[in-house]
Length: 510
Ligand code: AMP
Image 1 (cartoon, protein in one colour):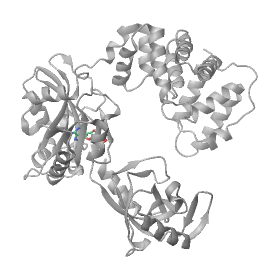
Image 2 (cartoon, rainbow, N blue to C red):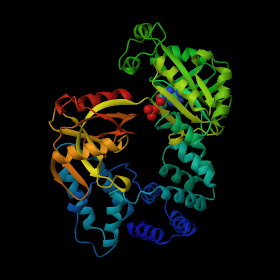
Image 3 (cartoon, rainbow, N blue to C red):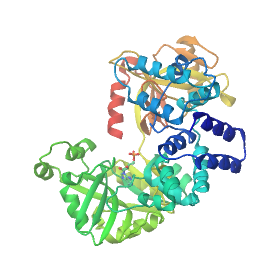
Image 4 (cartoon, protein in one colour):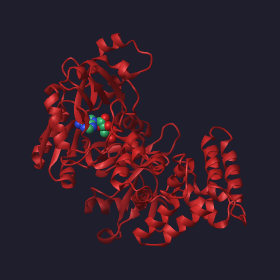
């Protein structure tokens, strides 16, 4: 198929606001493609590429500009091959090669094709709604229900391969994506809640469980055959014989069980994450390390039981089935409540027993494989860092005339300067706003329309819930739910926390 056909479809989809028409236009294209092309085109029209994240910045795309071709002769497969080559380039000198490759691709594209490729490669075509529309279009083109396809996409963790299977083989093609013993399922993931009250606001009544800081495992069992998969779905069975034994002892014929394993001290407190992870190192003397660091499983979910997938059952039903087969000491402690005080006491108990915090789960939710959805929320206690104010933005509304949103940085003792970690205007009282405006203006270095940049001297104690890996700042890290606790007038920038400390905390918090 010609790239021009895809570009034309993309244009028509963008031009109409009617959902049904978008679906029709896409379905018509889907009926015309076959083989590998299906995967390529479906990925593009849902806003991505078959090669995954290519991450081409605007500067590189600008450099790649070329006079447009007059005739539309590029095939879908030509572009896909160029993207394969592009994704394979790395290391020294690859930047130049990348630019050349893109330039020659652009030189073969007509003007509308160039526009499409720019949007695609800059990640601009990526819109949440597109995936939903693509699902409906696939259903229409294949005569298989959208629900059935959505499930397969969730279990596969991607859409393009599922699209090919359903277009080529119909509903039968999707059987390979059902939950099956010994084929690991993408684990369900969690979002972050600010605190217990926030989780209850989002979920209403919630099932709270201890959040353990160990290693996620998904164990498949049929009779005496047991396979243990890690969070990244590697087979780690050989490293954890006591987990294999524990699962063999459960009163069930076959099952898939989800949980966290960790090493406890002789007093029953959790070892730090890194210590538990020693059980998963390479080239281990398993018997020796097992004697030193025995693992205890804490189960929190069940995906399959006695011949059937249960992932579509509500969380509370899955958990009560789990409770029937798991010994109490291997079950995640849990509490179902809508009372914030009870949930806060439960959090305190988890922390006192050395665990990381709580998970709050929507009692009615299915197991959303691979998804970081709203049905599981993690709650970790707030932590604090002393950070330096690098700049501040003028406030709006009630805060007009005051410097409000603070840019926060940590001292980088390796590279020099400060690594930006986030912005916040939360936690500031009126007195603090007035005080900081005066102090920051005295430290002014430069300004633009919104922001005053200052000498990095003021230190503030910043409370936050989590350090995230994030492309937002060059530091690669960002604070979640940051708020100002107080100014540390007793500290100078030289006494503030370093970026290296933050990196260490980030490593420990994952
Ligand atoms: P995070 O990796 O911070 O996004 O948190 C999600 C991870 O917490 C899961 O992948 C599990 O490894 C771990 N975890 C610990 N306790 C629980 C629990 N009770 N329920 C679900 N996940 C848990």
